[in-house]
Length: 624
Image (cartoon, rainbow, N blue to C red; front, side, top):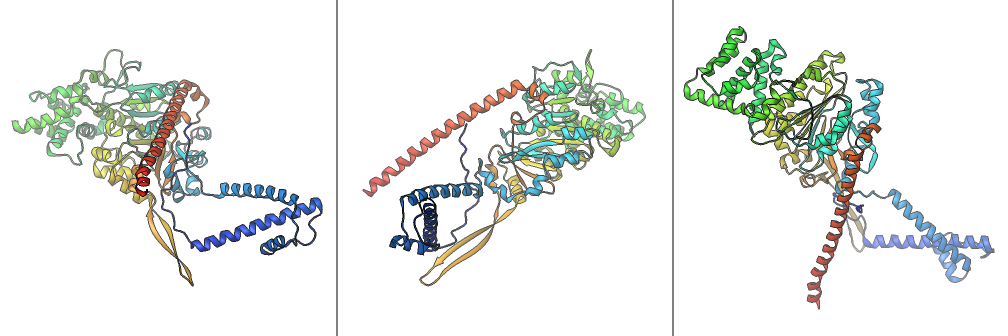
């Protein structure tokens, strides 16, 4: 194992409070008094054993040593032995007291600042006992005991004091690359969910690690239009994005605009506003979606329509429906634009719908023989089903479709919650949205954070930086997401200075005491000053130790959390049995990493010693 060394304190140390002369005098007094008391005790033991010395043993330290040195109080061999024993006993006792009452040492540098953060009252509100009591308001008592909430970490150095969120708390998690967000947050959230789970990723490892558990709990759906996880075997199924429109006949036109906005957002990068052409393209695509939904056409027909300006089938469908006159008027206006402008609008629409042209994508969104249709309304009413949604950036990115699928499930869950007693889902749905900026580019997401917790829809939106969120939702949207999250976690690995300054300010300051002393021939004085100092600076937050997270939780002081990977947590026996091989493999990998780290540490120490010797040699030579 790696040797854990005391970490350096991130805070500056206070200056001495007294002069060296005063300190030396106090040390001398302590030595004289302590040795006199040990000597008096030794003589008392000698008297009890041998009957000597006779007479009174002075209690005053000065008088005692004068009596011993002058021979008035005799010293014996027994007294010498007793003095040695007492010195050892008192020395060991002093060492124990120092060990108990001295400031603790920590494994990580940042652990030193936790004394300036949340106190025991704040930490108790995030304890398992506290969140379990809250869970009893929403769940049967037995289920509340087995699934009180999501455990996102623990108090540093205290694995028995876990940190939990309740079934109303939504997350915003910002971890840099390779900071451990998947193994410490996403996978544990999937295992801890009491009901259905929706999780997203741009890699297949999330499925590999969790399928042994989710496969035993219920039906597993893997939406993989880019073939990211070819190893997964499942019955063929498809999702029709137009179901988002067909679900409510009275609101089909507004739902079509919402779906078109999802496709627009998936094609736009780093934009806080929609430009003229994007706005016209969205209006065109929403009309095409509405026509296809009304006529029960596959969504791929819209791609053919947008690439053939002479095909007026969508207008005919809307006109014959006798409904949605406004949408019909907008669509006719797009087709009747002057050729140059119309070409630009249709080109914009074609770009938005490009994902529908890919052959591999089409089989995931259109019916085929033997393929089962995914029904979001049915999914949210199941007991413990799991939906994996995979997408990654690139020319064949399917983020528009993955976003539409996640939105479809969340909207179905919202409707189910509204129709249920207490206005929330009977059992919470957990949405662990890893790589959200790539997979779930849903424009409405920030606004939903304000009320999804009260519906029992527990979202965990995971980003690699604040700037990444701005690229999807714009400044105002990202700020809304930041502000509405009940649990805001930062796990290090980010160099976004603007975000780190926000964190620095929210974490707050501590009053640092500095003392200086001065002395003259006739007087000695101590000056005390106070300075407000940031608890964690931007630089310290950027260099936050791996395995630690700063947590901002509603109504509480900032918290420093120790992160625990899923294989080092306690799980129900059936989960540990299902994951036995994977847990053993992960722990073996962890041991190998620790051994490599220990070897690297030894090599660094050796290099530092060599450097110090080589640096000191020229100085010694210069002095000689």
